Image 1 (cartoon, rainbow, N blue to C red):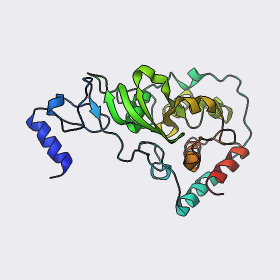
Image 2: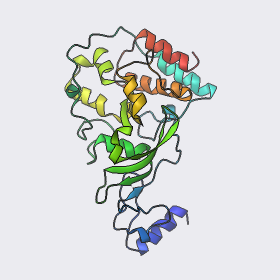
Image 3: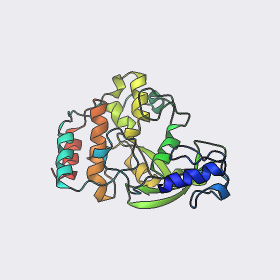
Image 4: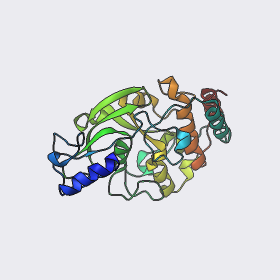
Length: 262
């Protein structure tokens, strides 16, 4: 019997059920749970990702797996450059008319056609659960994350986060919404803009400070401080642009290729 099966059997015998990432621990007391799953605050604890440093974007084309791991092998670098090479280029259009509200209200759960939508949890909490380690949920909630440990790919540092200091972790739009607006989203339907704003492929929980410094920059103007992750960041930027048929600037494309050895 596997360790997980033994835990489940122990929980069932105690009249409780231990559920994996994205769910609460239904009907369980701390004394009923296997070692490491109890919460001193009375909230439920869910499992984090097996790899605390995340997933290669090449292995995560829909963005549902945790984090953003570095790309280092020559084969993966070649695959990264092949993807980036597909991007069309053009100049940035005017920012005239851009408003965040034109992409829907923040972290809506009702955007159609994107992973994790319509699951009863807002997008921000979905992402904290996706990428966090030692995630604790608010007592009585299946959604609201109140504490976790996050490996921030942009800085290469771990963040011990609590909801009381919410802004220490922000959700980055890899392709910024204003950038998308200037590169074509101004002419999209509202539904498509809502998908871009809430698609987990385009979203990463990261440290607040580097995210604030990024603004609406493309890769030619801003890259993560952690150099090891810059090719992965470029790939994720390209994945979003390809999915939404967005052009990038020629300077951005050149910079992305350079980060992946081009």
